[in-house]
Amino acid sequence: MYKNIIVAVALSHGDAGKGLLDKAVDLLDEGGVIRLLTVLEDVPSYVAAELPRDLNDRRQAEAKVELSVLVARQDVNIQPEVRTGAPAGQILQCAEDTGADLIMIASHRPGLSDYFIGSTAARVVRHAQTSVLISR
Image 1 (cartoon, rainbow, N blue to C red):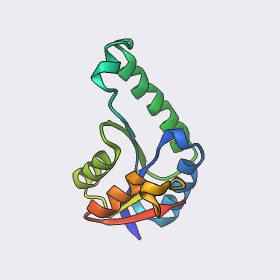
Image 2 (cartoon, rainbow, N blue to C red):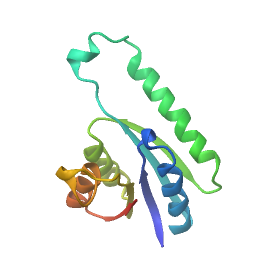
Image 3 (cartoon, one colour):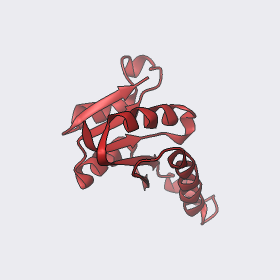
Image 4 (cartoon, helix red, strand yellow):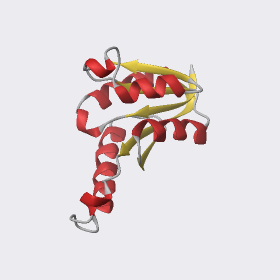
């Protein structure tokens, strides 16, 4: 069905990423690629000044390890990627950079401000130039 899928996962949401990745594998055409993407939000400069200088490097390394654990369970072409910045913006940028034909993202139980779907998922849906599948 799809040749180039982006699976955006928040590593802090536990098994949601595994379930989403399993669904992506089912939707992937033979010879296709899945980009397993996580986005680390920037640490505000007023907070970063009080933190160790190598914190961002450690955060990136930890995220890569967690993504590799998810990738190891599958037997298709999965490329893990860690980006830094605003999650919705980085997901959309990754889709544009790679020519994705599907973005998959999990949505948490929403609060009042984002009643139907999570705020990151809502932003991705509103601005994506490709199909978006939201999983709960």
